[in-house]
Image (cartoon, rainbow, N blue to C red; front, side):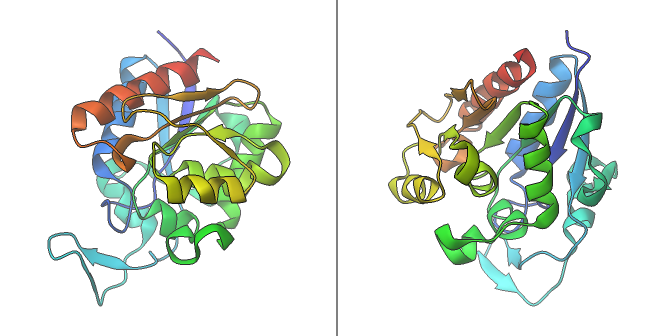
Length: 219
């Protein structure tokens, strides 16, 4: 059992425009099963877009990332701007296309993407304070954007060659892994897993995230 406190950052709710719901729930479940505590955070701003998840088309709506993340958090979510890593032992980022559009704009600009100012600050705080980081699915791209130039973290995106190439353009190193596998960067205390970047079953996602959370908490 662990008494550690983990900050979890969600990019909304829904795999096409927010946080991937399966990955988010598996993350929270794994943290709880390990006996640790979590607090969910999200940026208090509008989503990049809002998608119809059945038609897979954008709709003419505006939704707030923090409000949407509250659906997964059951209302217990705090603004990302209030997160200080001095108050937490670890940081975990689930994926979802919203992570690539709301936490960074990789989904729009590719390797030349920018990053949310608070997201960058929190990741740099975690690294400076030697707090472990877990990155799931597309989230390694966020880590690469924030830390790649100075720390060159080793990350996995699974086997997606295009995204792996973009990680390396940002200064990170890529290592292939199966959907339920993890890659551990001991020096930078970063653990990553491909999840739905390559998984086809929720069991693969759950198994990989459980391994990731266990390894993050073991640091």
